[in-house]
Length: 183
Picture 1 (tube, one colour):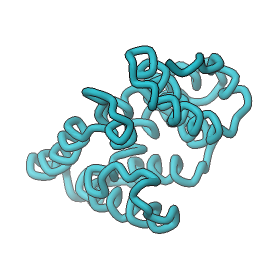
Picture 2 (spheres, rainbow, N blue to C red):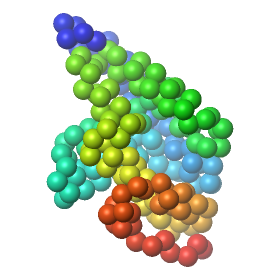
Picture 3 (cartoon, rainbow, N blue to C red):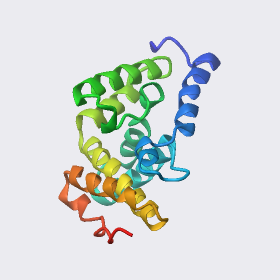
């Protein structure tokens, strides 16, 4: 969307259709592990955004920028779906598909490229906030796995362990309590 093209109802409704899809889309990793009534992709994005605001403020990063990156980080999944390793899509192909999807979704609502830059910041770990959110994506998954495990889905623990291994920043990994024994 060029700066001269104002946001209008059609563009906003088109964007919202993608947002609504994320609100209805259950996180596939939880479905694969038998979690009853798993969180949606949008609920996960909200969790990451809340964690980003809190940890950025505590760590000297920009909380507003971190929260924006977190809100945008999974927007592409409205078109690609919530791909997991079980789908067998190679990482580089997944990254290309997601970037194309994000560009398509944001094209009509991102006049100066701010939203796409936030998505790219997350995908490429360009800034301290992008790196923070990349790790918080995994911390949210680990904390959610702990909640599902406490609720009786022991298989969620496999995602907890996977998430822990993916967190790069030691100070962020230290925020996770050790996982309890599987039930």
